[in-house]
Length: 125
Image 1 (tube, rainbow, N blue to C red):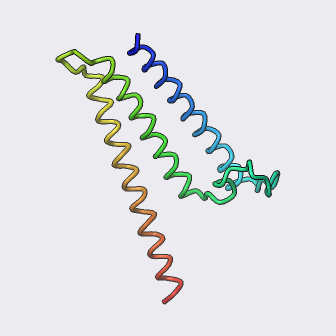
Image 2: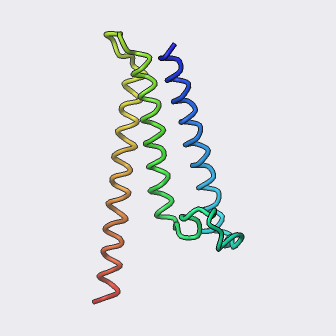
Image 3: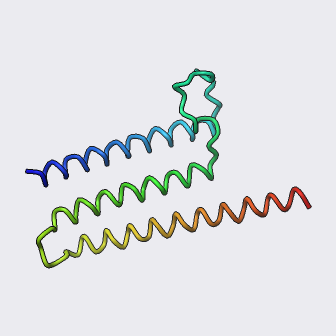
């Protein structure tokens, strides 16, 4: 059915986002805390974020990925609930968790913006 195909497609998208998130954390964590990865520095296939993302940027990308994964899970719930009048308690909790991720992401971005602004004013005053 089209509904099961859509759910399978969303599950595949969810796994892809999760795999990308794991790779990003591994590579950025290694470069930030162990050593730079200089292999294929001039290659056009090297990801643009590699070697440039710091801990703060990794934190923002991580929460952004969590929000995207949470949205996909909510979308799965809503597709499964289509035609039903009652929303279950599990879906309500997923909505609360999703909103918590969104609020956390906004607060992380705001804290980074304030820190960058403070650094900028501190170095030029």
